[in-house]
Image 1 (cartoon, rainbow, N blue to C red):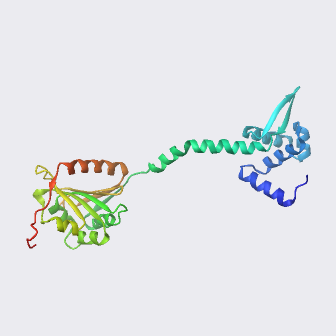
Image 2 (image 1 turned 180 degrees about the horizontal axis):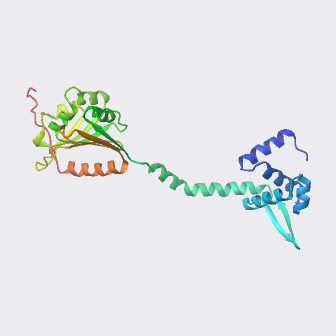
Image 3 (image 1 turned 135 degrees about the horizontal axis):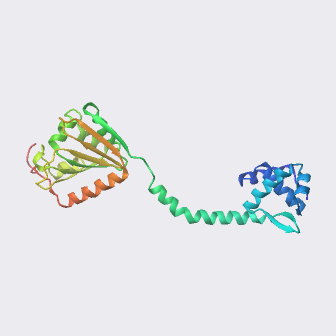
Length: 260
């Protein structure tokens, strides 16, 4: 049965999508039309050099679409039944299905290079701006409030900006260095959940983390701060935070009727 130009175009497009180049297609279709033959007659029929046909056949044999047998000392070639393409696709689909869980694992645990950015005094607000854009909507901190306020500066108004952005704060605070008074109502209004760390913890440095980012702050006098984008470091900080949270106490130092 003769093929129309549209039929031929469709075959070419599908075989190209299957990874067949022009020579692959000519050799396979030539063998399919001839039934079976040896190398020289096939090359003559296609008008191609014997060496080209030979290398192409080798490639197609490896792909499983040409069968080869021996008749005396000669190799005889035959195009596999076209249904072989369906079998190959079925095997490929089965193979892909088998590795889908592994691909999902790669997707969940991307291989990334942690990125470290160091900030000096005048650029520290870039860290706070980054935290306000967090995807999770929650910032965690372990903070010495007096030292943290000195680092931020009075003009930045981090609490006001954070509340306006709808970003919640979960805060562990050094009791000895606290500078404000809070009650449950203020915490709720300012989207904050806070606890006092055990009294023996009196450090002055500060840590904030959100999403896959962890930020470290030295004191104002030291004036060097840095931010690290690292999932493993954030996971470690989150576990340490939860441990400290479990041994920390309520932070409500302002009576309901007390005027601030």
